[in-house]
Structure formats: C-alpha cells, structure tokens
Image (cartoon, rainbow, N blue to C red; front, side, top):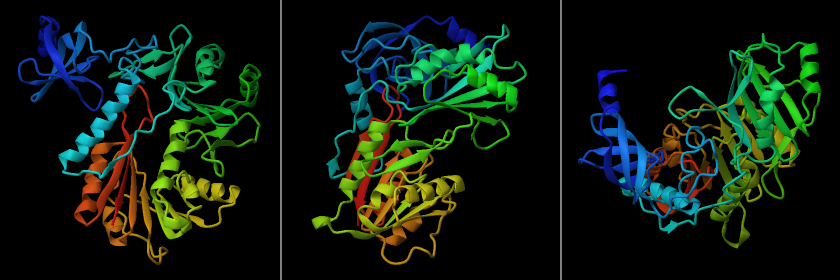
Length: 439
C-alpha cells in the first residue's frame, strides 16, 4: 500500500450531492469543486463516500452510506451485484437507465455541435434473460473445486456465480451446474475460460483449456453432460477457433427476421440480445426504405460480420456488398447467403483499418452501413465521403468514436436526419446507438 493509499484509507468519510452519471455508470460529485467519480452513487442523491484514488483532475471513490436516496434507486435483483463485474446499473430503475443512455448519446453529439432532426425512440426489450452469449472465467482451486464466474470489477479475481438474471434460458441453469460437472475433469487439464451460447435451436458449451481431452476423457465428460440440446466445443490456448468434440453435426443458428437466419459458432461475434437485434434490423430497413417501395441499386455493409445486416438488406437492394476484415466471418456470411437463398449479396475480405475502397464496387452507391468495433471507423470515413452515397447508417457501441466519425460526414455536406439508442445491454452502462445521415 502506497503512502497515498494509506492516507485515504484513514481519511474521514466525506459527504456530497451527486449531479450526474459518467459513461461507466459512476456518480459524479464535486465536494470541493474537483470532480469525484463515486461507485454506487446516483444523480439526485446525497451520499457518504470515501476516496480510494486521486488523480490530477478527478478523484475516484466508493459509497459508504446513502444519506438521501434517488427515487430512481431500486434494489438489485442479483445477489452478486456489485462484486461481479458484469452489471453496473442494477441499482438504477430500468427506465432511468434508458434515459441515461439517450442523454449520453445526445451529450456526445452536442459536444461536437451535431444535432439530429429526429430523436428516435429508444429500442427496448425485457430487461432480464436477454443475454444469449457469455464468457466466464474458470479455474481450479487448491482444494480441487472448480470456480466459475465473472471477473470482479477492477481486478482479476473471479467472483463465483451461482445465479445470473441477465442470461437467456437455459444458461443460468448451466452456469449453476458447471462446477459440479467440471470438478471431475482430469487435473492435468488447466481450464481458463468458458463461452456459453444459447442459439435458437441448441446450446453450446465451449471450453478453452491447456490441452484437448483424450478420447476416453471426452467420453467421460459427455457421459456426465446432461443438459438438453447442449453441444460441447473445445479449443486450446494456442488454437484460434473452437471445434465441436461431441460427435454431433447440427449447426447452431439464430433468427434475424421471418426470412433470414444466421449460422453461428462459439468464438464468433453474434449480437447477444436477440430481441433488440431484431428490432435494430427492422429499424434499419425502415430508415433506408425507398419511396414507393422502389428498390435502390447498391448497398455497402462495412464491418459486415457474418451477414447480420447484409442479408436482410438484400430484400431492398439490387446488390449488397459486405466487407469484413476477418476471413472466417466472410466465409460464414457467404454460407449464410447460400443457406437463405440470397443471391444478390456478396462478401469480400479486406482490412478496414485504412481502407481506400475496391475496384469491384462499380456504379453509384445508394447506402453505406457501418457497424464498427469500439474504435470506430476512422480508416474508412474518407472512402465513405467519396462514395457520395445518398444515405449512411452508422451503428455504434461507443458514442464518442461514432460522433468523431459522423463529424467527418457532416463537414462533407451530409445532414444528420435521425439518431437514437438501443438498450442492447440492460443493467450495464454500455450505450449502443444508431444514426442516419443523408446527402
């Protein structure tokens, strides 16, 4: 413990009013004029707190006592909150969570003088049982017992999980049963991570470990694997992809709408909230729908993944071109197009970190859709401007990088028509957003 840490540990608790939330869900107070980010505090509250970290421009602290509670404060449903690092806002009413996320988006836009003509209603769905994919840490304790859970917030320690209310069925039951099943695994297999994926037709349990089990070890594992419709996948720490090891060949799939379903695998990106994903796809199709039901000619889907937007867009465009940097995802997208009898969508592997376009795109581009990672799409924005596409739809999981990229379009003559948020991750501070711009 440093001298500063020791001094703060012995410091008398302080009291202040909370005036805001920051992007990660911590309350903001200014007890002496300096910003203090306080775990567990909500706007409108008066809290007693203790600092545990001091920076030049702000302090960090945690709540000791709620002196005056916010009317939006609720009792967290999960007994692991807030030790588990999975959820950060279970103590905030769900409606207030959505309002906070909408305000986070608007504040980000206003900071760079962007103002949409229309604020889209927030997309929302049931707040519990929504998450169809989860990664859990796993390790064998000194007494031989198996610990399965999420990492504690701000540390590497595993919080053992016996319940998780945000997981989609039947994942909570599987999480509770995993330690009892895995305790009989050979001690020579070092376990590191488990991915659970609840697809629409089956469930996958995907294990990352130090080595692949032998045939006899695998047989013993499968004999005790009693979960209905559960598939067993495996990879070592040196392998890049999971392989199914239970002898089955049924593909996992998720339904996007009444026409399209995607084949998915553990380890590959899939939208975790199935209901919000369906609503998001419908919203995109409504935003880009052409007048009088006329089909537009070309749509380009950047960061297309395995076809989540490309394949539904094919119903409204003569031609859809999906671009993705990961070859395995492009292969899945091509397979998904064939499986869904979509003949007017094509997929190309290309590095989008610094992209200048491709010769294969000929003719006028009507729509560019972007669904980049948290780092945003700075590497493709010059090309998007050059296309002079009539419409640009930007899907974002990080508003600050989204507004950086949107400003490039506005400065090039695009008008921001609409923007809104999607409650993809209830009870977390993650903000998913969508924006429509037109030339």
